Image (cartoon, rainbow over all chains, first blue to last red; front, top):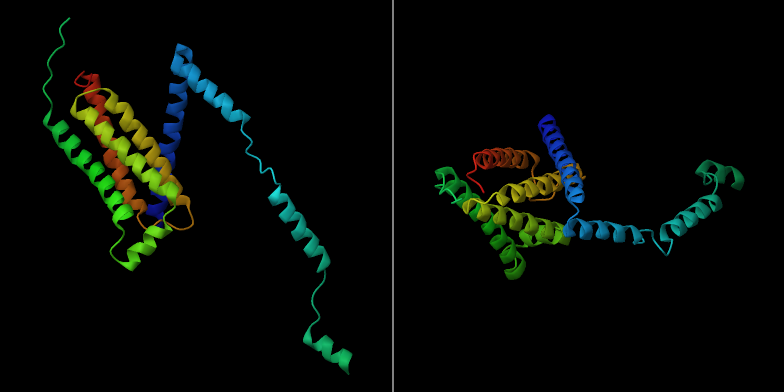
Amino acid sequence: MEVARLFATAVFAAVALTSLVVLGVQLVRLGKKGTTAAHVLGATFLLMGFGNFRDPTNELVQQAKQLKQREEDDDGDPPSGKENAAVRD
Amino acid sequence: MEPVDVSRPKLVWVISIVVGLMAASQVVVLSSLLLLGPSSPELRDIIASVPAFDWLTLYVLAGILFTSMVFLFRLRSRAVSWFAVYIGLGSWAALGYAIAPMNPPYFDELVSLGGLLVALGIFGYMLRLRKRQVLR
């Protein structure tokens, strides 16, 4: 059953990639025609390039820094029960 | 030059009506689930677990499929492009669901594979009709 599901996923991937290639070819053909639609589409892609996809608050970096700091502060293994007993004796 | 009258093949009747009704019923079922609310608590939990983007994907796919079937019924060659878009988007969505850690409740790989194979068969038939200039 797992093999069948894997095969199904592979078929989805193949068809999806084929559709992407066909889409690319169609876009190139449209671009070569130089119609208004092609200009509008090209301008849209250009505008998408100006978008800021990076997190402006740097939240992920801050979280990673905090995690690293916490790991450095809690360095070493916690004392085991035997060690605690030896200290008491 | 006068356009040649082409009679609608019987298979076009069957495909466009059956698949078109399927797409329309999908929109009706999705809308009734969203607007009227589910009948059981289990169904409510399932619906609550589906993200908004997935709802949108299901609606868009059903809309594209319905449009394609309308064009096929009218023997327009644009049906081929719309159906190709449907297959492309549908396979991307199916790939996304298949590689996700948990399958959504309405998705099964093997059922979707069967659907994809049927869709590819219909697509091949459409291409043949376009080559014979039945679709214009």
